[in-house]
Length: 246
Ligand SMILES: *[C@@H]1O[C@H](CO)[C@@H](O)[C@H](O)[C@H]1NC(C)=O
Ligand SMILES: [Cu+2]
Figure 1: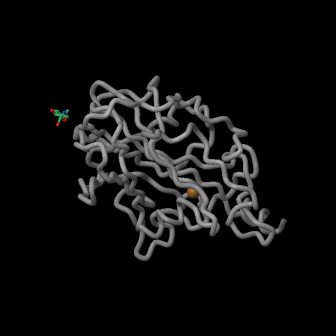
Figure 2: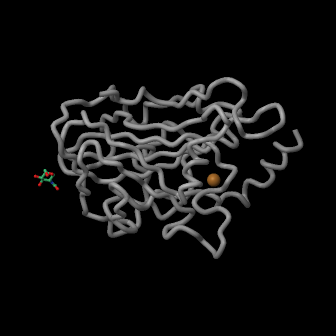
C-alpha cells in the first residue's frame, strides 16, 4: 500500500515522464523527425477512452508534414517514440523514450482514407494490424520498445488493400491502471500509401468507441504479489479488436 501512496504522491513530478510518436521507418529506412507523421507538441497522455482526440492525438507541431510515406504490403514499418520531440529532454534522460515504469502494450491500427496528408481523424474506421502485450516472461511491449531505443516495428500484413491510410501507433501505459482513468493512452498517426495486391480490411472499430474504461486490459493491475510489474498472474488481454489475419 505504501508503494501506491508513493506513486500517487509523485504524480506531479512524473507528469513529464511521457512519450511522443515522432518518426517513421520502412524496412529500417528512417524518414526523419516529424516526416509523414502528425506529432503533438505535448507528451501528455489521454486518460479518457471517449476523448475525441484518442484517434490521432492533437496539438500538432506545425507545419504538419504533408509527406505520405510509401509502403509495400509485407514491408516492415516502424514508429519511433521519444520523451519529447527530438527524443531525450536532457543528457542521459532516464525517461527517454518513456519512463521505465510505463509498462503496457504497443499497437498499430490502419484507417483507409482518400488523402492521408489531409484526412481528418474523426469518424474513420480502424482495423488493428499489430499488437504486442505481455509475454510469458513478464515483459511488455513497452519493454521491447525501450530495448529498441523507442522503435516499434511490425510487418504490414500482405493482404492489406492498396491505398492511402492513417497508421495509428499506440502505447497504453498501465502503471496506475488499477484505478479507473488510470491507464495512459499515447498515440500518433502516420500518413502512408500502401501498394500491393491485397484486398482486405479487418474488423473495424471507431476511435473513440473501440475501448471502454473498464476493459480488462485498461482497468487492470499489472503487479504480481511481490509488486513487480510482470502481470497479475492471468494473461493480459490487449484492448481492441483482433489483429487482421491474412
Ligand atoms: C501511392 O502508390 C501508388 C503505387 O505505387 C502510386 O501510383 C501513387 O502515386 C501513390 N500515391 C501517393 C499519394 O503517394
Ligand atoms: Cu507518463
